[in-house]
Amino acid sequence: MMADVNITSNDVNTPQLEPLVENRPPFTVRAKKVFKKIWSDKLIYLMILPVVVYYVIFRYLPMAGISIAFYDYKILKGFSGSTFVGFKHFITFFSNPDFFKLLYNTIILNVYSLLFCFTAPIIFALLLNELRNKHFKKTVQTVSYLPYFLSTVVVVGMLYNLLSPTTGSINALLRSMGKDSINFLQEPKYFRPIYIISGIWQGIGWGSIVYLSALTSIDQELYEAAMVDGASRFKQVIHITLPSIKNTIIVMFILQVGNLMSVGFEKVFLLQQPTNYSVSEVLSTYIYKLGITNANYGLATAVGLFNSVVSLILVYFSTYLSKKYSETTLL
Image 1 (cartoon, one colour):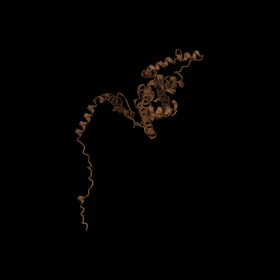
Image 2 (spheres, one colour):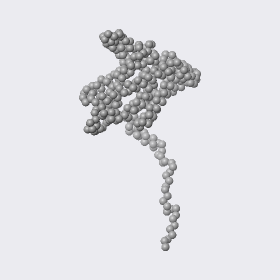
Image 3 (tube, one colour):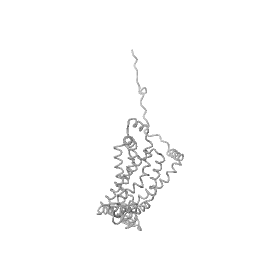
Image 4 (tube, helix red, strand yellow):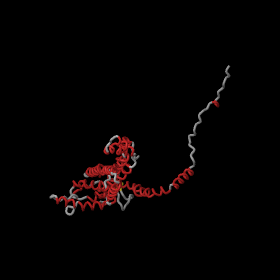
């Protein structure tokens, strides 16, 4: 007969419950570890410190001025002596007869920049990547980088000299061909082409640096395998090069879309003429004239806030699309 076996609760291996509260070290111990980590990498933190200070002073602290958009702000009276007007300035701006013209001019100028100034460095980087003569390649790169370091004032001065109806070389060429001189800077239809072409010339070399860096990380064995299969250089670019730098292009595109509402104020303002206001007046120049010329700080801040909110929405929208279709995102 089998002996009766008494099973008690002590004989059963019951799982041990983990404590609900994690045994974390005291705050002082954790703070010492963090400080020790920062001190060990102090040189790295010292390098990024100027950038952090710059953004805190010139980017984050001025955000307190956003509240000016809701006041009839008087600079001599300050906030305490200014009247709170709510959304009055926004209503004034949206009901302005020139609102849609300003918005259209801003968007169309940036769309042209996105189409041409954004794609030009990519094409330029691909062409440079195909060069086999290293000395010639470095020379072309150096020459293309130089215009980026010219100030906007210098570039616009060069445009005035180049396009002058009397002494400009372009009009001299036209006259030698038996054609009449053209006052390019006065004609509204030439404003956008001048802005875009000069932007491409100034930024194509510098903008290609990121893509050239991405091109160096491509596995060369992919090209060798493609050559064995008989793929031409063009097919290698389409099927190997562009897909390999796709993530870099998407990130740069998102950053560019974030500036879609922020046209370069300096060049637009310097190229403006009374005869081309219909195409050259954009939000940034309008804000300048409201805030500086007319001292209407409340309305100028409201327009600037509207501009920033639209830019933020565009960044999130482009990030959402890039994450949805390519798994690449900044957020």
